[in-house]
Every structure is written in C-alpha cells, then in structure tokens.
Amino acid sequence: MIGIELTPEHPTDRLVGLGEASEAAGFDTLLLSHHYNNRDPFAALSVLAERTGDVRLGPGVVNPLETHPVTLASRVATLDEASGGRAVFGVGPGDPSTLRNLGLDEDRGLRPVLEAFEVARELWAGERITHEGTFDARDAGLNYEPPRNGTIPVYVGGEGPHMCRMAAKHADGLLFNGSHPDDLAWASERVAEGIEERPASRGDFDLAAYASVSLAEDAGAAREAARRPVAFIASGAAPPVLSRHGLDPERAERIGDAISAGAFDEADELVSGKMIDAFCAAGTPEAVAERVDRVLEHADSFVFGSPLGPDIEAAIGLARAVVDRCSPG
Image (cartoon, rainbow, N blue to C red; front, side):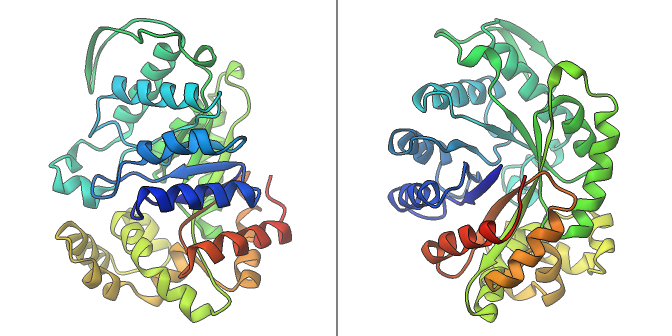
C-alpha cells in the first residue's frame, strides 16, 4: 500500500479535489479520517467513488461506538458497490479526546472493534446475524446483494499491544498510528506475536505505518504545520509510548484537556519539539524520505497522513516525490 490520508476539516468539494489529485499522483489507497467534529467522511467518499477510477477508498478510521456497527457495515458495503469493489474498512477504537465529548471514552477498547468487523464480514457474506456483546443485533441483514462475498479488506487502526496482536490474528492489516522507526520496530514485534496465531486461511497481513507527515521545502514551516495533528496523537498516546520518547505525560494530558474543550490553539502551543520529532515525519522531502526509509525497515507499507504540510496541494506532489525516493512494499 502507498496510501494517503485526508481529513474532512476541509469543505467536501475541496476534499474531493484533493482526493482526485492523490489518485493522479499515483497513490493506491485514499483514506478519510473520522471525528464527529469534522465533516462526514462518507459524504466525500461517495463522491470520490464516482470521480476516481482505481484508488481504494475508505474511512481511516471510523469507530464502532458513535454509529451502530451493522450500519457501518452497510455504509462500507454501499461504498464498495458505488466504487466498483474498491472499498477498504478502516476501523478502530476512536480518538479519546473527541469521544470524551460524547461520553464514550470509557467504552473504547479492543472488543468493540473486533466484534464490529467480524459482524461486518458476516453481513457482507450475505448472512443474517444475531449478536449480543458490546452491541446488540437481532436477525439483522443487508437487503441487497452483498459485495465481494465478504472480502472487503479490514484494516484495524490502533497502536496498543493487544490491538496490534488482535489485528495480526484476525484482520487484513494494521494501520499503526506511528511515524517513528522505534515505534514501528515495536509494532512489528507485536504483529509477529499475533501472526503466530493467525489462521492460514486469512492470507497475508499488511503492517502499514499510518504516519503523520508534514512536507514543505521550508523545514520550519513543515514543523509548524505539524502541531495540530501531533497534539491529537500526543493526547491519545499510551504511557509506554510517551516514555519511549521521553515525553511528559502531564503535558500530554493537558493537551487532551484542551482538545476536549475545543481550545485547539492552546493545544497547539503545548506541543513540544520533541513531540513533533516523535509523532510526525516533518521537514523537507529529503528529510522525510530518509525517515520513511527507516520506517519501512519494519513496516510493509506506508500511509502519508495528516497534516501533509502547510500547502496540502503542494504536499501531495512532494509526497509522491518522497515515494519515488523510497521503496515501500
């Protein structure tokens, strides 16, 4: 996978244009992030299904807490139908800072994610399901012909050890939220543990670095543009991750509090240079290419994630130039 992530903080028409530019630049997968306080990614994905021809499309990632998992399965199946079989289901536990606004942060975890995509696969295979667990469903099914006999690729978004192992055992891929080679080296070890229990029938597994990237010819401008996404990453980072990079957990908690309160400028100001180094590949194309090469020593593929850079249109072209310098799988 040579993927790119766009965020629906932009108007839908601009987001669609950026998606078309991403396909033209040669990216094979386009993921749109999901947070309740941004625009609905499925609105743009439905338009992109018509405006693009080859790029895979999907949410990156949606959570099974805000929307009933059976409804999510149908939305992804509809996208697969509309795009001619190009859908990808990116599903994860959700961002803790924004889920806190909805009173759902305590419901995050591995089990809701696993149950959501296992049920989705059953629905896509044409089955009717009754389920009792982290959500309930009674004799639910899709009243239209399911797509691709249940084979829409499922990518789990996450970075915790149990989530990494679960994804390797049950899913098609892991969108590991990390851009630092030390984090990907650790993730690769957790994935290897999960693959030991992976049924052979599940096929190959893709460990994708779902990396925050900020590109510009001006390295300083690239680092400044990285503050907002790094704030979200730092606020949701587990204590062992913060410890691995020598980061202050109290500062990360203050960033999360600011995000939950909608004080995004305050959150940006709290982001330290060390946080940017740890959680974003930020700088010139040459510097980012070196970082991507180091990450790909441990990952199978790479997704260029938000913010991409101070000028997103230019950053898409710069990201393509980085790909040409590197050797993603």
